[in-house]
Structures are given as C-alpha cells and as structure tokens.
Amino acid sequence: NAGVTQTPKFQVLKTGQSMTLQCAQDMNHNSMYWYRQDPGMGLRLIYYSASEGTTDKGEVPNGYNVSRLNKREFSLRLESAAPSQTSVYFCASRPMNTEAFFGQGTRLTVV
Amino acid sequence: GQQVMQIPQYQHVQEGEDFTTYCNSSTTLSNIQWYKQRPGGHPVFLIQLVKSGEVKKQKRLTFQFGEAKKNSSLHITATQTTDVGTYFCAGNNNDMRFGAGTRLTVKP
Image (cartoon, rainbow over all chains, first blue to last red; front, side):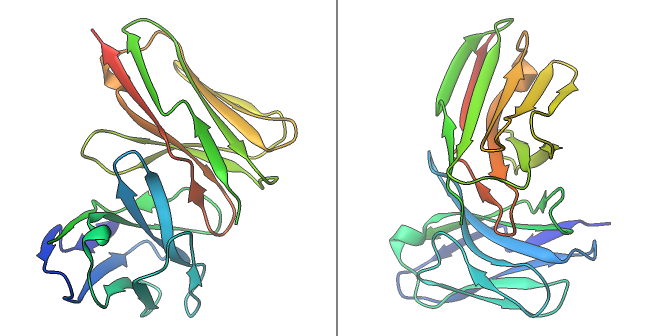
C-alpha cells in the first residue's frame, strides 16, 4: 500500500498563479486533512473533510479551496498564490478519530 | 474548534537527561494523540490516550492524560540522539488541531 500520496513534492509559483495540490489515500479512510507548516508555527489546519461529500474550514482557510473528489482524493487549490503561502503542506487521512497518516509533504515557494 | 497549547517550544538537552513536553487544551478533549516529526520528515503517530488519568508507556516514553481531559504530557527518560525531532500533541476531535510542537535537540 502506498498510504498517503501527495503531488507534487516541490513547486515554485509566481505571485498570482494558481495551482492544485493533490492528495490521495488508499486506506479507505473517512477523514482527510490539509495542514500547512511554517517554521516555529507547528501544523495549522487549513481544511478538513470528515467524510466523503463534506468539507469544513480549519484555522487558516483564507486563500484556499478544497475538493473531496471521492473517498480517496482530497485536493487543495490556491487560486491566486501569495508569498505568505510559502510553506510546507501536508495532507493526512485517518479512520474515525484514530491514528492519522501523513503524506510526505509538498514544499511550495511563492516568489 | 479547540485550541491546543504546547510548551516549551524548544528544549535542548544533554544525552542521558530527561525531557518533558506539556499540552493544554481550552476545552475537554474526547482523546488526545501524540506525534513525532523528524527533521525534514512528516509527522508519525506515537500514541492515543482516551481515558481520564490514563498513563501509557512505550519503552523510555511515558504519556499521561489529565483527569479533566484538558491536558497531557510526554516524558522521555534518558534521552538519546535518536529522540531528536519535534513532538506534537493533537486534540482528537473531528478537526484534529495540533499544538505548536516542542522541538527537541540532544547533544551527544
């Protein structure tokens, strides 16, 4: 099993460009999450999907949109990238209220 | 959603010394999870605590959940260089919010 797969692993964007970060899990998990990690800030929740068909805002949703395409896939979209969105993005999935599994992360730089 | 505060932010110890990180929530948690992230890596699950007052051990690591289910701690006895990394707690409600983490460095 691949677990949680994030693509791309690295990306450089220019200010104002858009892009979608992809996340897929093959563990049949109900819940999926997107976090961003900045130095000294820990993991901050952007959006989550408790189950297929639902999405909810987390702590820092501004500037992002998400789509729970199906049970496997949960994508994060930046419509107009800003330098403040330079970060490492992690996707995670889990069954109901148990251990979460994380992807390897996407390192995004906005110039 | 709940706010999870974690202290200290950084801890530097000599190998063989003990280490403790603390996690406090503004609301009662259904349960709490602990994760470890090695430098350059992704968070990896360590343990989940569910019951009020629960204590669990994993070799040199001891995890506690407070009686009111609002605080938790992770204690490492006799640290080793392999313990280096950032330790996070996560309030285990649907929106799984993490504390800011405690970054542990160990001097050989």
